[in-house]
Image (cartoon, rainbow, N blue to C red; front, side):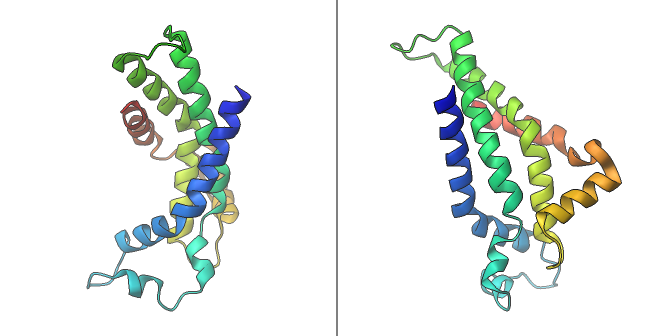
Length: 161
C-alpha cells in the first residue's frame, strides 16, 4: 500500500508541474471575454513568466493526494474482486476498479479543481490559499464541493475507462 501511495503522489505532482502551464493557457483561452478569439500568444503576452504557474499550489498538493488515493483504491478494489497477481483481470473488473478509484478521488478532485479554476481566472492578486479562504468563508465545506456531482461522475466514468 505504501508503494501505491507514493507512486501515485509523485506521479500526480509531477504531472501538474509539467501540465499546469498548458492547463492555465487552456483556461484563459476558454474564459476569453474579448470580442475576438484570443490566441495563445496574446493570452500569455504581457504577463510575467510566473503567471504560467498561477494556481499550481492546490493542484500539486491535491493531485498528488488524488493519484495516491486512486492507485490505492484501484489496487485494493482489484484485490477485493478476486484478482490474483499472476493472472490478468477481466475487463469488467478493471473498469469497476477504475470507477471505484474515480469515485474515491472525488473527495480530493472537486475542491482542488474548484480552487484551481477560480485562482486561474482571478486577478493577479489572488493565490490558491486566498481563493480557498474566500470559498470557505462564503460557502463552507459545501462551497468547496460546488459542481462536485458532475466531477464525481466524470471521474468514475473516466477512470473506469
